[in-house]
Amino acid sequence: GAGVSQSPRYKVAKRGQDVALRCDPISGHVSLFWYQQALGQGPEFLTYFQNEAQLDKSGLPSDRFFAERPEGSVSTLKIQRTQQEDSAVYLCASSLVGATGLGGYTFGSGTRLTVV
Amino acid sequence: DAKTTQPPSMDCAEGRAANLPCNHSTISGNEYVYWYRQIHSQGPQYIIHGLKNNETNEMASLIITEDRKSSTLILPHATLRDTAVYYCIVRGYNNNDMRFGAGTRLTVKP
Image 1 (cartoon, chains in turn orange, blue):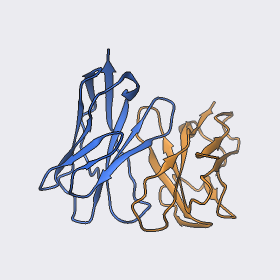
Image 2 (cartoon, each protein chain N blue to C red):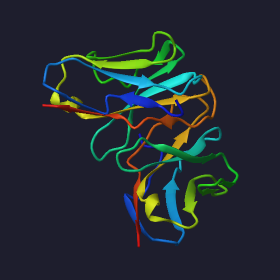
Image 3 (cartoon, chains in turn brown, green):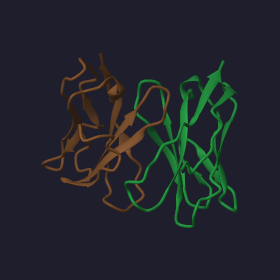
Image 4 (tube, rainbow over the protein chains, first blue to last red):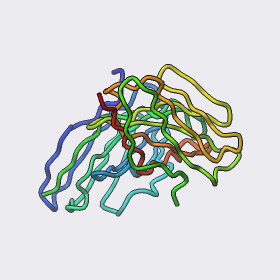
């Protein structure tokens, strides 16, 4: 597709449930990023992939958060045992360039997760 | 530590130029200034970036002061569709260091 696609667009989970959020980056984009955006705040970096390698996961808030990109294209962000504080919009972005470079990111529209 | 400081909100009249300031007094020599915007319920959209020279594209102009401690994003003829949160970001050459602050909420009024 022409842009970054994220699914589902909205997700409601009961506290304690596991959720999986999907990101389809732009074809051929080497780098993929996940961000978390709480209501009224700017996006916060979670993790970064270059192809299938997860090069930076310093922003993941706890070990309940796990991301993968096994074939270097589609990525999944998994949250185990969801808590209310996990409620946020989860944004995925991709970039054509690798580990160094000045490319801008292309963002998806995000998945809004609400934990009840 | 935030690398940039932006006013939380600004208004602009439709058809007029919108000038959005950003302070980045601790910027280092190899760091770039990036601007993104985020329209309600969408992901951030790349606008423009620069190092020390002024830059212009079809969306906006970026004016960086000579000492590089501040910059201004200019939307020459703001429209209602430019209402959004605008983020100024300072980043180095590593691809994974795009960090967003709180941004400026620009409201374009008819």
